[in-house]
Length: 445
Image 1 (tube, helix red, strand yellow):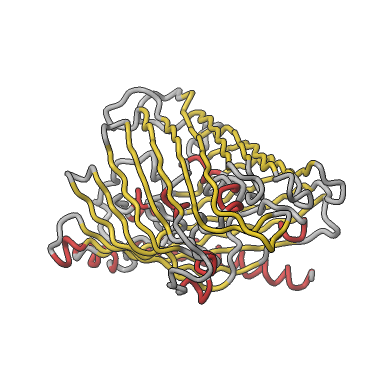
Image 2 (cartoon, rainbow, N blue to C red):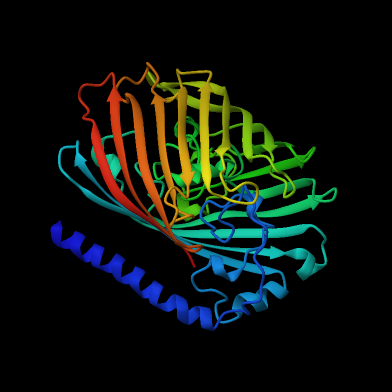
């Protein structure tokens, strides 16, 4: 085991070193440096990263400083002129349990993601129409399984190759209305906040873990996605509404056939329907106040689920609600600056604990950008989440996760995040609390 871990660590460090050495070489061969940086978008801080990419980012332009390989020997620049934008990234987490568990285990999990978006106005002269397709390749193991924890310690465990989201997008009414249809992930378009990406635990990144624990068809690739459609309408500069309907095939959600399981019905029925209202506070470029986002969502599925206390019997569907928000509360540099503190909170509830393993979930936290004056882009984050298990699955146990991390921002394309998590379970004396330490790497290629 020690030998395998040493080889793995050597390979990872070698890859990182090689990429950092190649970065300046790629920069010399990139597109002209005169390209100006686009205006930042509060809801899409990582525009060039395809990993669990939200459709909010699809029309967000980015400059080559956000990518390690820059212009890919001018390939990106040439493709951009015909409306094609390729993106790629690599993310991984190396973690170990310093306390808890039967044995100390080192675990690595990584995701290599690729995506291509095509502006069909450029290619087919179809105004407002675009297409998107993504794939991923996952490697590594799941530390949470060794700890018998219901909440994964990182969001990267999805081994094997998977086809990701694949859809058409149409913008109408002067871009106030956006419609998507195809292979979609509810989790990529609903129940998420930008601040969630500051954390490592799967308990909150990219969504509250309860939503996928209760219905795996909510979570998206990797490993799986569903046939579906969703629409977003911007009523005013501050109010936005969204709705979506998604298929409920469990085989598709679990990534059967590497994400190419396209069957609509196979033991499932109905659809997962979601509605959401977003209040986008002070997010216009002319706003002088501190930005925030507040979201209320409702979901309902009429699929059939096995009873937790008797899996041979089934019950039809459930309804749920989620509330979440983040708000910048301190910004010493004033408008247009990123330094300062952001607080956030989230709460989810599901109506039927007879079929929902985690009917109640809440979380809260704080992120501070530029705590160290010499490191103005670094982010330190503290967060606590609690997943309350159904009384019908006492073996699961209610779990809380406390995470503290420091996101060291080397550049706009590379962040390294040392972190610590403490996991403790309630109502289950057979499981041990655990302390997890690790480091996360994120590179936009």
